[in-house]
Image (cartoon, rainbow, N blue to C red; front, side, top):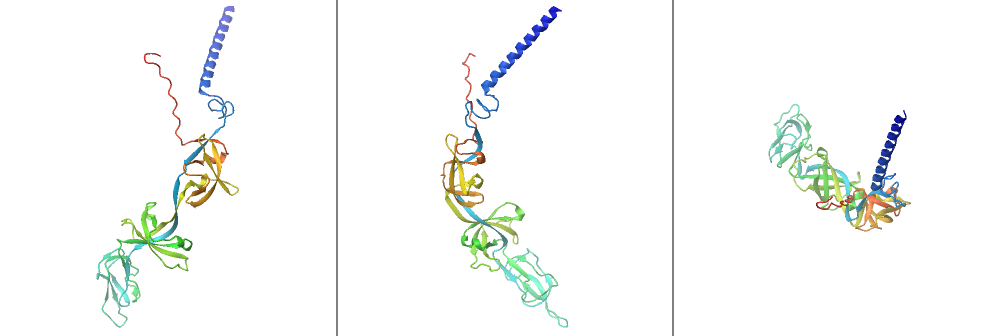
Length: 331
C-alpha cells in the first residue's frame, strides 16, 4: 500500500512539472509576439508600454488642383433637323393612305387620296404628293377622316440627321452658349451616353413655362437613336479650376465653419479651417486653408482631434524584415 502511494505522488509531481514547462513556453511565445492583453504589440489596448498614442484607421487623399464642371439637367425630344408638314390642296375625306409612320418617300411620291365629293355632287379623287424626299415622321390622319386645306396629312423629315430640342429653366439662361457639350441618355438604353452640342439658342424666353429652348446636334450618326424618343439631357455649362477639390463628406462642420484634417509626415493630423468655393455633384472647391500636394482625411474624421495619430487603411502594409539566413553549410 505504501509503495502504491509513493507511485501516485511521483506521477503527480511529474505531471505538475510538465504543466509548468508548457506554461513557461507559452508565456515566452506571447512575449516575443507582443501578445499582451488588449492586442497591440508591446502594449495594452493599442497603447505602447508607456502610454503611446492610439492609431485611428482612416482613408486619405492627396489634394490636386482639379477642374469642376457645372451642368444643368433637363428633358428633350429627339427630332429630325429638317422636316416639312404636308397639306392637301382641297378639303374632303381621306379615302386612301399610301404611306405609314417611318415609310421612306421620294419627292413627288403619292402619299394619299382625298375625295372632295359631297352628297349630290361627285368629284375625282385629289392626290397628295411628297414635296421633298425623306421619311414619314408623323402621320396624324386616318383613312375615312375628313380634312381641310389646313389639316396636316403627314410630316416628312430626314431621319439620318437628328437633333435634340430641350427647354432650359430661366434661372440658367445666363450660362447658355453655342458649342456647349451635352450627354444624352435615352430610356431604351439605360446609362449609355450619346453626345451632342448646342447649335441654336432661342432668342426669347417662353412666358408660359419660363424656359428657353435650345437645339443640339449629335456629334455623330447614332443608329440607336430614333426620331420621337424622349431624351434626358445633361448640359455642361461652366468650368471652375485652379483649386483643390474634396468630397463634401470629408468636411467637418463646426459653428458654420468648415475644417479638414491634414495628415503630417509623422502620421498625426492637424485640424485646419478652410474656405469653400463651388459645390458641384458632391465635391467642393477649397479656396483657402490647404494647398495641392497635401494629404487630407476623407473617411474616419469624426473621431479625430488635433494631433491624433492615424493609419491609412489603403496604404500598403510594411514588408517585414527577412530573418537572418544561416551561413552556407551551417545551422
